[in-house]
Amino acid sequence: MKKNVPYFILLPGFVLLVFFLILPLVASIFPSFLPENGGLSNYVSFFQDEYNRGIFWRTIRVSSIVTIASLIFGIPTAYFIAGLNKKWRGILMAMTLFPLLTNSVIRSFAWINILGKNGVLNSLLLKSGLIEQPLNLLYTEFAIIIGSVYLFLPTMVMTLVGVMENIEGEMLEAAETLGASPFTAFIKIVLPLSIPGAIVGSILVFTGTLTAYTTPQLLGGNQKMLMSTFLYQRAATLGDWNGVAVIALIMIVTTLVVMKVLNFIAKQVDRREFHNA
Image (cartoon, rainbow, N blue to C red; front, side, top):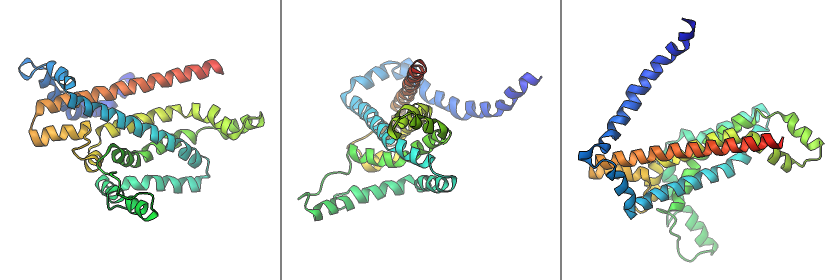
């Protein structure tokens, strides 16, 4: 009986997961595989269409750039926060989380005011004499990337801080005692030990960017659609539910592939560090 207790505790959550997530998802996607709805030819046709391929690869490109940018900015920020005392760490963590308390629509409109032709950035550039005409920054991939990095960077920082604050300070002191510079100690000790957090953060940021709707819609518009906005257009405007199922499954499979690739990279890095130790 004791061996069955943990499974019994998990049963309510499992039932909720099956009935409110898995079954609706299967019910939405399964019809796209039926012969009368086109079957597998739906997926072949999707990638044969140049317009669809463009949206798919744009989504992968934007999600990848946002993930890399979040890592570049998130790692040093998280390292700085993790190295502070408990009081200041709590203050900076609260400041990091503060943007998440604001609705994503409001944050996107803020970026519209910044990146628009009459926005803050163009006004500053025009007044400084660096440009003669306003730049077309809005409704571009650049705008989507900027808005998405702002949206998901706190997630990356929070994930990395949770890992870095558990790294023993004595390890860094020992490395510096043996002649390693702070930068070398960071590269050789902090980065390898932070890989689990970086992998989790990368998965969260990539999948978040891949599935986000508000920011790509408001900052990219119909000119630079991503898979999420493409899916919404098919559903709300065209009522093409078979096409919606195809797009949804492609997004799910893409997410799973990215997770597998990142986990594989993490295992390879861990194995290399083990052999080098």
